[in-house]
Image (cartoon, rainbow, N blue to C red):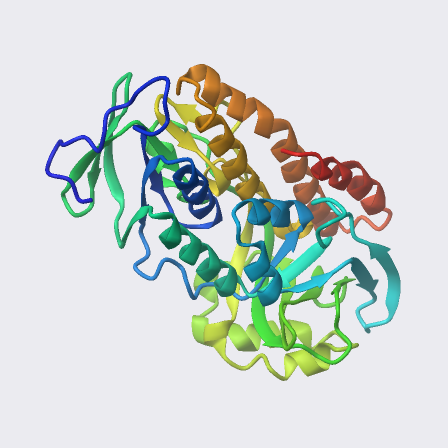
Amino acid sequence: MPETPDTPRASATAGTTSARTVLVIGGGAAGNAVSILLRRAGLAVDLIEARPDWNATTGSGITLQGNALRVLRELGVWKQVEASGFAFGSLGVTSPDGTVLHVAEDFRTGGDDLPATLGMQRPHLQRILIDAVRASGADVRLGTTADELEQDAHGVTVRFSDGSRARYDLVIAADGLNSATRGTVGITDSPEPTGMAIWRTPAPRPAGVSRTDLAYGGPAYIAGYCPTGENTIYAYVVEACRDRASIPERTYADEMRRLTQGYGGVWPEITQHITDPAKVNYTWFHRLLVEGSWHRGRVVLVGDAAHCCPPTLAQGAAMSLEDASVLAELLTGGRAWDDELFQEYHERRMPRVRSVVEASVQLGQWQLDGVRDADVPGLMARTMPLLRELP
């Protein structure tokens, strides 16, 4: 890459994978994962990412449950992830003053040979995946978008933002919640705010913090933290959505600190480190579930481009990674790349994704509605064990 105008990358051969060519749009968890898996099978993969820095420094922390770790092991990066993160196996619920009310064992959704949960700094995970994509031999172009897609029965011709063009057998849209590709191919589903927003920031790990603890109520709907390493955590508070324009970015630390000051336990120690507005992230919760097929011709959606849920179950990255695993399995199985294959991908993923999206939204809605007798344990007991099954 780049190719000369209108020159195909390679020709498609129905019974083989070695000649097949794929463009992956977006270098987040789903795009990176599917690139690694397809390259392992010998396909020619180009990955484009709009951000010049490949999102290598974006975000504070991420909570990865076992089913996400299972796919990271499949990608060959589990040892690096394990060394970079902080594993734990329980979840605490506290009152706003810090009193521990309940401790529950986490579901081991990745199987008994993986931790139930691992927290890590999001930039560390992204850099691990970036290194794996580079090592796979995928052709990567940063600061690049796909501006035009022209499909026929056998593939897609793509015009890029730098004016070059190339031909592919398949385009995988991994360009996130606000996917431009989704609309380009005529899928009209779009994300909807759920009414909640979250403040996140990294912080030093207080002594004794060895799991996620969640406080419900107080100045915010939810206040929580997750250890991300031997010396680090990320902390978060969830409140009702506010107009972003009404909150200048220079006040982000003040706004988050105003909320966290109302919590006890280790929160005073965390709060004293919330001083740099550049390290505080403010994001609305959104819901998205593309109800129909996740493909149009030779363009197929993965990850947040097809579905997104609030982080109340900590399953967003896991669902994206599972998409990549299932799609790569189907694409490298020697079958024709046709509607039947892409529909099978959708049918395998949809029940699992739907259950996660609906449960995640329900957990948040109970908080918004102030439901005190919500059956949170029952919802978790119905949803989480299903994720132990292979996707």
